[in-house]
Image (cartoon, rainbow, N blue to C red; front, side, top):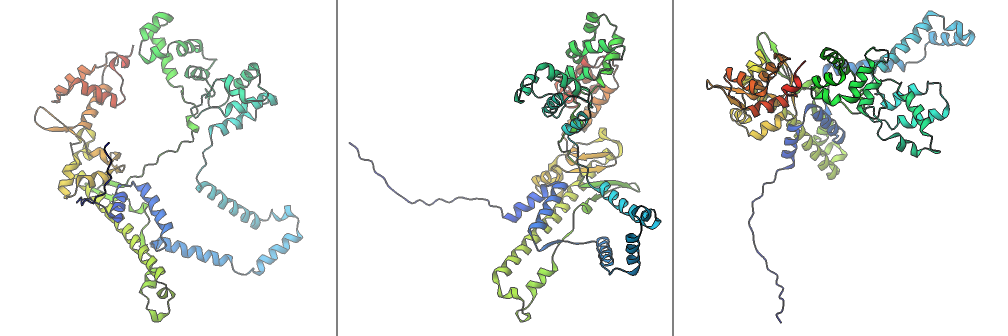
Length: 488
């Protein structure tokens, strides 16, 4: 029987690792942040680092001084005039006193201040359920129906549809109401604003929005309940054959149906809207494109002079911090951290400015003439021109926007691949997409262009592009096939 041997040994192994210092990682993160996220980051740094503070502008300093003056005026002793007013208040009737111009003026000023504060405060968006409940409580109905209705309302999703079948929704009520009472409650909900609310499916939602007084009500109802799929597939001749109605009648009815809202609750959705704040603005000034960084959106940072003086003070001054090495070390580290943040933000702004400036040099024709003049541009080209790594360019433009005379665009929009034309010149993919979109916009709607026909028209413009590429571009633009675009 062989015995098992356990041995221990030591081996030396040489490996190479790349470790980035924390401040370098932080600089990369700051470079990547869009403007709104950078502002949030700065606020967190101000809260966590006591030596970091905002450098106030002259206007901010004046505003603070004015505020201080007003505060001091409010704290002045009560004068004789005010005492006289107060004595009058005690002697006179309340109603007579408030008819005096002076007091009415004072009350109006207070109202104006409150109104101004309310107007300047952010509105709290009302939820769909709150909006429906406010309407529902005004209906003159019995309490049983009201209780069922409230329960149904809170089972309506953000699009305005019932999340579950009515049978399941009422199971959690005690006692469980009858279906007759439940349908009575839902019939009241169907009459609430916005129209179409509380439906079980899209067909019911759209039918609820139809006007029963419309002479074409039953025809539109039939189209919604039986022919939505055929309408989406543009099968109007089939609908005409089965309904006996003309193509003109069908076109008119469908146009009316298209104006209905398949998601009536979306207006009251609690989802946050994403705000876009451009990092860079390009303006045309006296015939020249001028680039401006949106620095005003960010607070200007500095190291607090108070903490710098604490460290620079000598022992003979009797400063307590000199006798506390831990406190002194803490402040030194906080100042070092704050300096890194300030430098990293400056470096971010400088890098972004350089990248955008170089990009604008290549895309001046786009600024002058529009998307059709957008030129092919790779990040590597900009990186080579600026003598920086291509990853730096990629991080600098990530999720950032630029405001131009042509509109607001992601900065990445300027970087696009190329397609070679017959004359040897290159054009950008974005400009080709724009051409495809223009061709379709100008087509005969009764005889729309097929993808193959679009390929032929592009060849006439010197662009040799495969049909599958045209199909890909068309789908990316959200444009349906020629069969579905056809008008009868």
